[in-house]
Image (cartoon, rainbow, N blue to C red; front, side, top):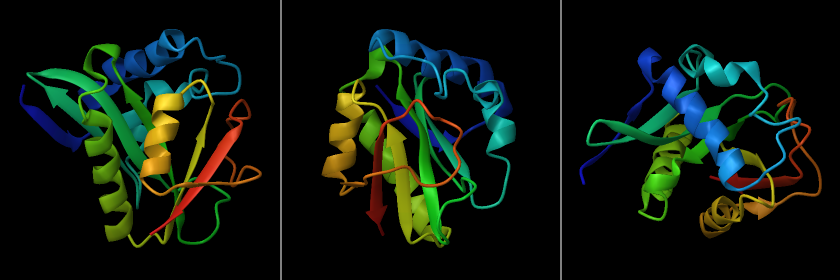
Length: 160
C-alpha cells in the first residue's frame, strides 16, 4: 500500500469530517464539548488556510485514511501551537499512519518557529494518548488556550 502524506485540499472536507466523527463512535467517546460538535470540523480546509497552520492528510491508493495538524489556537502561550485533528479511519489504524502524520505535523511546527506543542484529548483515545507519550508529550494539570473543547480532560505538552 502506497501512503502519501500531503496537505489538505478543499475536496477533502466531507471525507475528513466523516473520519473524525466516526472515531468518536468507534471508541464510544462522548461528543459533547468536542471537535465532533465543532462546526469547523466540516470546513477544515478553510480553518487551516491561515498563517502558521497546516493540516496533513494520509492517502492510500486514492482513499483518505486520516489527518493531523498544527493550529495556532487562541490563548496559547507565545510560540506554542496545538496539535489537532489527529484521527485515523478504522480500516487504516495500527499501520504507522498516525506516527507519520504526527511527525509531519511536528516537523511543520518546528519549521513554523513554534517552541512547544499542546494537545487536548480524552482517555478513550488511549491509542493516540500512548503515541503522544512516546513522542515526548508530558501531562499538564489543566487546559491551555481557548480551543472551545470543554469535553476534553487530558492535556499534554511537548517542548521542541
